[in-house]
Image (cartoon, rainbow, N blue to C red; front, side):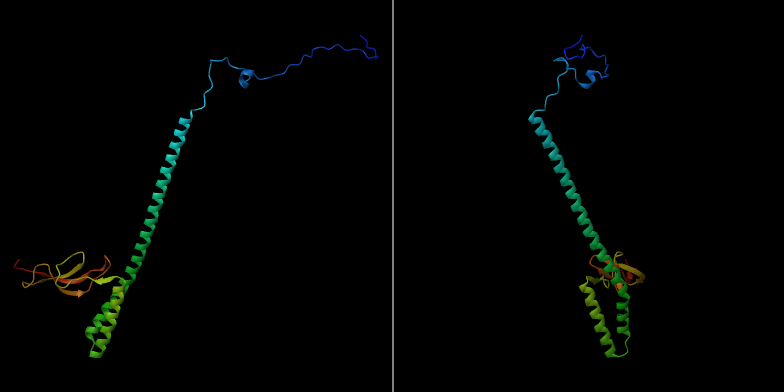
Length: 194
């Protein structure tokens, strides 16, 4: 067939082209019949609110626990620091106690009254400084023997005092607050009549 403009008229024909498309069912293009598998409905507002409230409560509980753990750790660290300071002070004072013993011995052995008075003054100043730091002497002479505070060097037979009483203090003991720095070295009575 020819057209008026001189060009042949081409009849439309169908093109035979195959396209590979995935099955429509896998892509979700095929609609399922109604009533077969209904889509889940959105949860009601009450359920959503209950879920969010439970989540909030769990988070608040977790936060409270973590705050308590933090507070406990802070207190533990402060307590450890205080114990460390006290331990350091105890070691320093413990190293000074022999100096105090020497001052006391020198005061007792001093030949002149003037030297004895000077040494006694220095010893008292030293003791006053230790008292300000919390150091106290351990009571010993005339006390009942306490193995937590006293170190028995010798047992002495005496019938004029009760059994297990401190009759002589050889070296003074000291405590720093409630901590024993050094036990008192003592002689303890043993009453043969009892």
